[in-house]
Image (cartoon, rainbow, N blue to C red):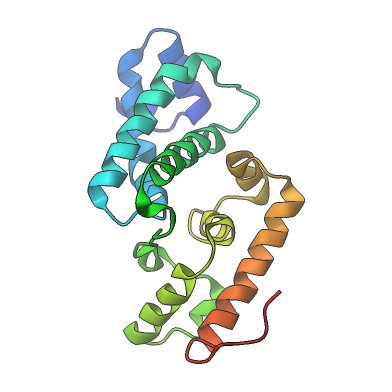
Length: 190
């Protein structure tokens, strides 16, 4: 299996589609942790995230033949994870109680990093981000923590690239407003 490690995703997909089914393990290995972290932005229950992740890998495997090779594979697999996560959220009471997991430990954007100098502030920032509507939180997470480009986010969320930029910009403003006005209600909304 070591000979497959350096192959691009798209080549791995071609091998699997052409009969080398055992190579699919490379896809799972490459995306398991990243996708689980992403799915955890929809639910705080690890067992729910594991179920969704399993569904994602089954769906990806079943649909490899229909994968459009013109698209970036990572965008395609994240889109499936996005849809499966929304299916979980929409099928339960979690719609109103979506919780953001401790993805802050993965890395912190430079703008915010200067202001974070203690665990207490990290916890407060997490609480602020938790309060974002999902339409703002999701593109922000994909960009800052999953390191997806605006184009990839556009593919994953199925929204125009220009909207991705607007949503991320507004998300940053809202996080700052929430964090700076968390103890008082602020009249500075859009």
